[in-house]
Image (tube, rainbow, N blue to C red):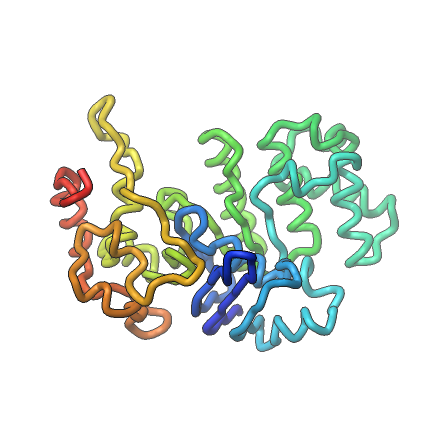
Length: 335
């Protein structure tokens, strides 16, 4: 359904050019879920906004994006009205900033239906109420007459999801859809998205910083670091045999329910790299337990065939065994 090849995004700033996305390539099939995982600033949201043609005009984009054989960038350049929001839709990270604070939520959902599908105002409001019911909103007949500030974070997120689903898109991009909610609501929202995906047969791109969110919900996982994909695999393969040290470090940093009480978390040391004039080397090397001198000799390629287990590392980890063996191993030179 979706094919991305060598996607690159640059932003010109006063300090220099920000290399936000560097050569990202992946495929997504109909009805499947792809999780894009990484720390803040790794390029996940920029990738999603590029797919939806939501970047500022100052962005320089290159590469190829096709959706069912259609050139998405050409559609965007032509100003096609009823593609974005209809064929592809997006759930944004913070519903409080993506919703209009001075319009009732029912009107905001109805606006999508009126613009793209030509519904009358009364028809659109009726469908808006049905959509709120579909996403599990309690008392939907009352909620459509409320403003965003009158709703909880979880309810606002359901409104944003209802808006994205209004035109029954074939691809839904969910950018950190559970950031501002507690873990109980997070589970309900993720379960709801997965159920709607199965019912409607749509594809889903789930963007998150948490590998735990991707586990059990994604068919494939793409791990992103410093604007590049560093590991891509089927979810089952990745969690059983992760090979990139960054993927392992992300999983190690998640608290486990069977850990002893008050055990300290195991964060990734250091900070993500500067994306202005990045070095011609492995970006993760300064933070990596497995780094060797040759890691600084060039940027490792994402090896392997598209659609199979691929990783960009000269000294890959050994999967689950290395997670347990390295959990208590101090990082040399960075204690």
